[in-house]
Length: 81
Image (cartoon, rainbow, N blue to C red; front, side, top):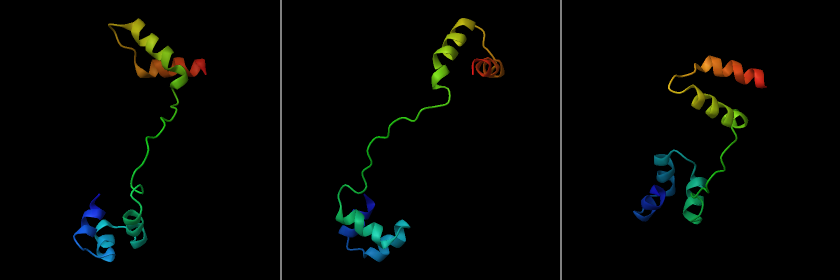
């Protein structure tokens, strides 16, 4: 992390905060805690079409080699709820 590099070079906390665009307390927290900057993987969020995904894929596969306009798919999905 760049904050640690700047601190090792002897840059003051005030100057690091100014360069990084964050508060001095944030800089202190990153320097104090080695795990502060690490984020875990996020769980995928459900999408609006997750319930209809199998229907849409089957509908597109059935129409090959032609394509189905998105407006037609939207109308069909609205009819299905």
